[in-house]
Image 1: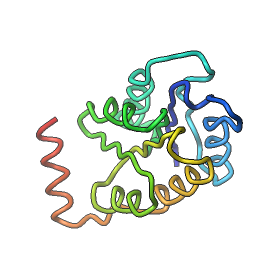
Image 2 (image 1 turned 45 degrees about the vertical axis):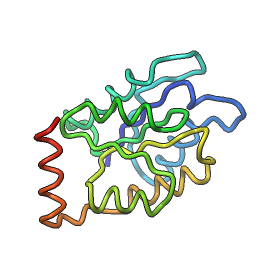
Image 3 (image 1 turned 135 degrees about the horizontal axis):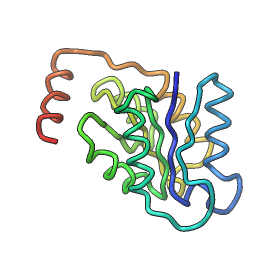
Image 4 (image 1 turned 90 degrees about the vertical axis):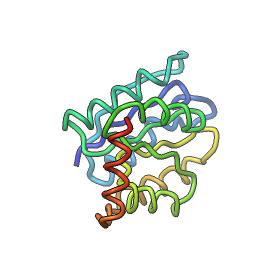
Length: 150
C-alpha cells in the first residue's frame, strides 16, 4: 500500500527525534511504500501546501491513504478537508482513529507534533492502518452527503 506523508516545519521541530523521518521509518518498517511530499526541514512553511499535496496524491490514486503532521493536526486537517473526497481526521486517541476509519472512512490521519508523543503517534498510525471502513449503509449515506456539500 502507498501512503502519502506530508508535514510542515513541525515535522522537524526540536527536540529530536524529528517526527517526520521517525514516522516514515516506522511506516517503511511495517512494509508500506511512503511518498514524502514535504516539507523536509525546519524552515517555516505553510501547512496548506503540504495538505494539498497529500490530498492530490490520494485523489489521483498514487496513494491509498495519507498522514499529515503539523503542530496540532488541526490546521493541516482543515486545509486537507477543502478537497471533495478527502476525509482528514485529527485524532489523539486510538478510539478516535478507529471510529474515524470504521464510520467515516477517513483517508487521512492528522496528528500533532505538539500534542502527541512520537510513541503515541506510532500507535495512532498503527490503528489507522489496521482499521477498515465497516461500509454500513448509514455510514456510506453520510459520507455521500459530505461530498455533496463540498
